[in-house]
Image 1: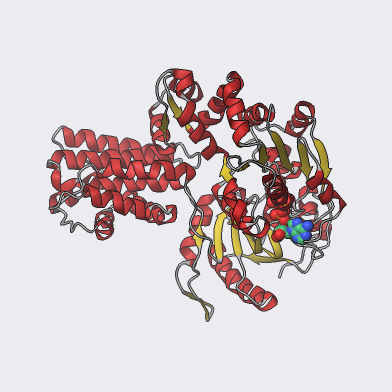
Image 2: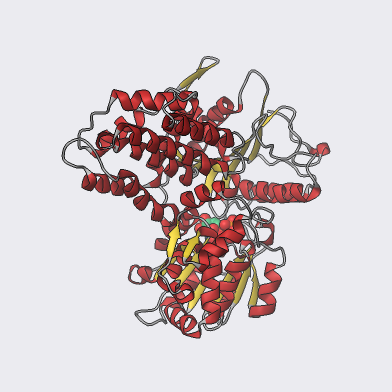
Length: 574
Ligand SMILES: Nc1ncnc2c1ncn2[C@@H]1O[C@H](COP(=O)(O)OP(=O)(O)OP(=O)(O)O)[C@@H](O)[C@H]1O
């Protein structure tokens, strides 16, 4: 790899560094080279830590380590999510704050408690933390407080990690920033940043547009700017188009960016299916290999609909579209909650009838509690209420009025013959989720568990629980234990040629082709009725989405969608 003067200076520099640059300018790459250079000088027990936001970003960075680090030193580079690092830290040292050993309340458990909690949930999480029970959002604050208060801990961690690299620094929240500052006391910190990729502001509490200035003031880092470079999509106009969308300025539409516009009776799902198949063929021809493609949408629910549509072969206007094998990046917490419902069914044969019915109904209500705290789930509240009513009715000896309640009773009364093979039995139990819209929804979400990569661990755990005859006593607890760590720290599924996710999740990643799809009713890509702040935030998100592409971007938009760049230069429909 050719290194220009700026990069040579970065490799030679000592002390804290702030490396800024636009999408694809090479921040991650130079940081990996710097890590390699630093590791050559460290003692055997010392490591470099590279902190990033999402598990998928960690995977992409980890996959690139091989290109830049010699084999011998690779184990000394730890690429981790912030939260995985904080979780380990709090588990190891949380007792220093509370006097009791730290317990982590996994995200699904938290959402259930939150749904039942009257009053301010943030205040409650602080109270829980003071009793040694830590929820996801308290991990950063607790790590920060421990590091700030204990010079011994600071010394310990700085000794282990003399170099700390912080990815997407512009999106760090106040507690993450406190941790970085505390470590910067005696470790060297490298911040990688692009202020225009600030996409958490307004979504995540404590993210601050002044963050880079904070770093400049507090750390006095040597600044480097890779701004003008673009190694991802050099010369094809994708970055310029992304910048035009960001600034809402007129732009020539390059050949690398295309629009497909649809109107009734066509649906965005089917049109996107078409575009995936077309783009795969186009890029395979251009690149001479199987391309990587991502489909991005404004919401997870919309993307899940596309996932369903492209999973099946279909014929449209005489054209046959093959099923598309793909990875869907989805909400693992909801999948886990669905898994607990299935696990409760695995316990039926050893439970008294009443207990089997009420336990499963409770897990169903829990599923909807988890869903309820997801802001998009407006109808979940009524499902929780209906399921609770069903439990009450059943306990009072009456017949529940809801289909879900009735179906669960019928299924328990039909009995379930389990075999002792956890994989088969899991499917048998899941198949009992039928007879109401709610049960079908849980059935679908439980299917997503295969994406969690915990399936082997689940099978082992369940095999241990098999009572040798008919049931898996304690299955729910086992499933909960296996999934708790997986939800925070697990590796995502292996990459596939086609990935689907919501736009926010695409930050820090890179694909040959990007398809940005917009539905008619789902949250729009952009809406002129939004206030100015929201429009600016959304333009940043769209730019992030566009600039994930190396070679080609396709937009799938409704015919009358609001243009992303000023109308005079509006791209022609194709
Ligand atoms: N100096 C370089 N010479 C050639 N290719 C490079 C160089 N630096 C980076 N690249 C390539 O350019 C692409 C983008 O690099 P990288 O991911 O490091 O950028 P980034 O600034 O971290 O991007 P983003 O902020 O969008 O995540 C990668 O495919 C990488 O291999």
